[in-house]
Length: 158
Image (cartoon, rainbow, N blue to C red; front, side, top):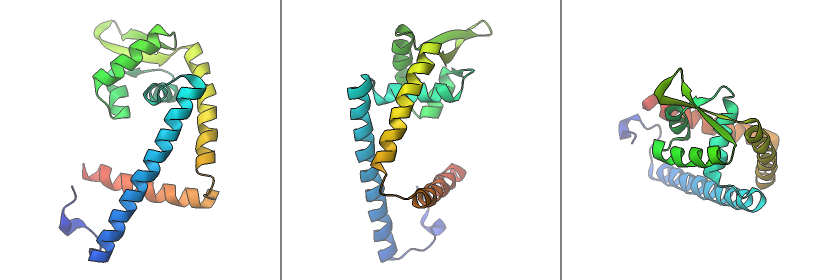
């Protein structure tokens, strides 16, 4: 929580505006996430967490340790382990020991995993573009910069 003395402007109207902003952000996020979940399931028979794991691994072609992956996705190691186990079983992810250390595993996409993710990612981008089509490119950039500022403010306070 942010201490009251560190908040910028604080009036009852400002407080209500910020509350409405939070509610609208939450509603928009939930709507988009639900739609993406549904489309991933229908089009690719894939869950959003599985897609998220593959997306993280795609961004790190040399692989990630399980602990890095769970931190990146902001979920527990246990949640990631189950998803990775299924991806390994399906031949989409490779799990290998790091420098012979039996306690540390590196996870990376296989060639099939990369191809599969690229197909899903192209559809995902198209869906997000469609869902946010009411924003011009300039409006999307402006909102993205504002939200990035908000995120970086929180990260500095941690």
